[in-house]
Picture (cartoon, rainbow, N blue to C red):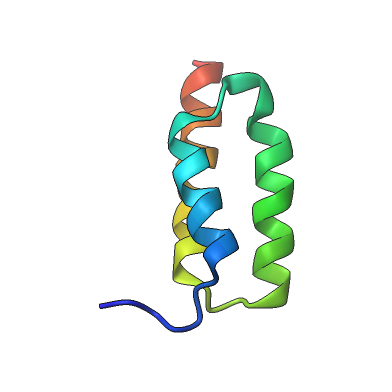
Length: 61
């Protein structure tokens, strides 16, 4: 079921979160957080943020 609070931009950010290079993750996280400032209920943007932060944490290990 699609959440009507999710924008096309957040869907693109989620897709990019999975294939983004490690060097670009912090910039992507900034973009995702700005999308969440616009709409805190955006489930797709929250998922993208979890993907990015998980990838960042695993890269530090």
